[in-house]
Structures are given as C-alpha cells and as structure tokens.
Length: 191
Image (cartoon, rainbow, N blue to C red):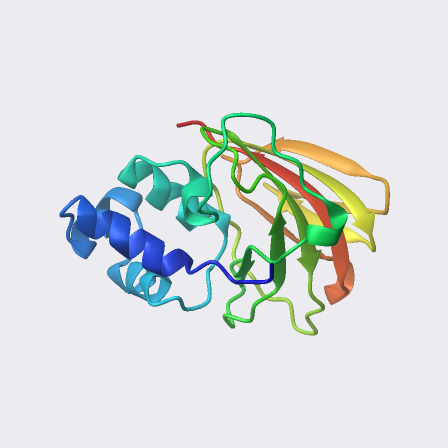
C-alpha cells in the first residue's frame, strides 16, 4: 500500500458537507483564504499546525484527514507495510516538501495521539517559520541529528535523544545543518 492521502480533497469535502464557505473556515482557523485554497487543491502542505486548526474548526480529529479506515480495537503497524501518509513543507518559505510522514495509527478511531515515523529530507537552504498549535509533541531521533527551535531556545538532538514539549509554544523541527534525519513523533491534539 503506497498511496498518498488526498488531504485537500477530504478537507474540501468536509467543509462543503457542513455548508461552510472557504472564507468562514479561513477566519475561524486563523488562516488566509489563499492558504485554505492551496491546501484544498492538494498543494504543498505547510505543516501540522494549519491542519490541526482546520480539524478543530470542522469538528474532526486530525487523523480524519490522514486515513479512511476506522477500528475500535488495537491497531498494529507492521514494518513491512510502512507507507507514506502525507508530505509537508513544514513551514519552509520556499514551499519545498521537507518531511514525509508515515502514520503508525491508520484506522484507529477516536484517537487523540498521532504517532508518526517522519523522514526529514535534506535541505540545503533551510528557511522556515515557527508554528504553534494546541497540544503536546514527543520526538525521538531514530537516525541523524535534529534541530528543534522551541521558543527562544534551540536544541540539537542526536540518535537516541528525545524531547517532549507543549506545542502552543512556537517551534520548528528540521534536520541539523539541513541534513536528512528520521524521527518518531507523537502529537497529542485535544478535541
């Protein structure tokens, strides 16, 4: 299974099913109409923060945008079944896709945690904006080095290191010195 989830189409469909104009969604999510249009047209996704804001306005969990199946029991993710869930530019000013998310919770209904293995792609000119959203994040470095800008502090994590923080504080995660890395990330988003 190696299909990319059409996140934008799901958002547009949910918005239209609620008979919500794009301007209303943009205002309530505190995003620009242009951002919403770009997302709905399946353009580069800026990061998790805008998706979390959109999910809250539409009254759905973040995972609604990332998978189709639902299970009330346990969900097992097998290594050999790993597939790309979604790509983000991760607030890169160039719109360059810099992260590939592999969901570890496809199909789990009513979840508040979103666990991912994330491939951070190399980026020679990493320019980005810090983002903020409700919830908490836990990151564990599987490969490479990762730099996390958190508020006014910068952390560099090596393989085996981890960090846990409140996502309401402005933050950004990227490969140290623009290098590739691989992380396990668990995002908690309250509904």
